[in-house]
Length: 128
Image (cartoon, rainbow, N blue to C red; front, side, top):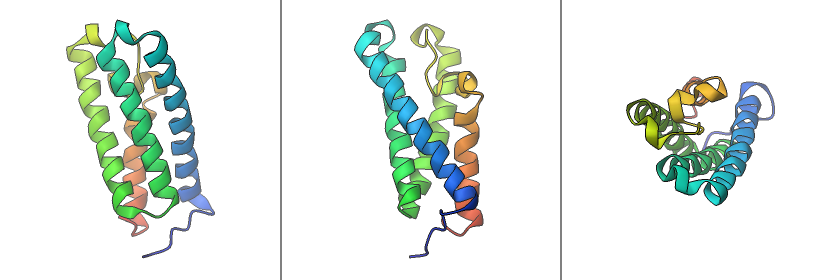
């Protein structure tokens, strides 16, 4: 198994961003599920799923679990595209912004860009 050189450079930055998103998404999803779940159950359930994806991606990237990292980043990208589309097609189910709704616009499109950068980094560094 090839060693991840995450102690410097882009690897460390990508893992740090995923860790921040994991913490933020987990806190936000917890709040949404506990206080506003009945307002938009689909949106808040998907918000909780995004938190789980960020946690798995962070751990997989940090622990050199290449296949799991690749799968979680692809799942994240597909999720952003699917939920972004759903939030446009079914706006009543997405009354409040979630991490993936509207393709991550409320998060400066980072949820859309981050998995692309992560997959690029895995590929470029022969980690995928």
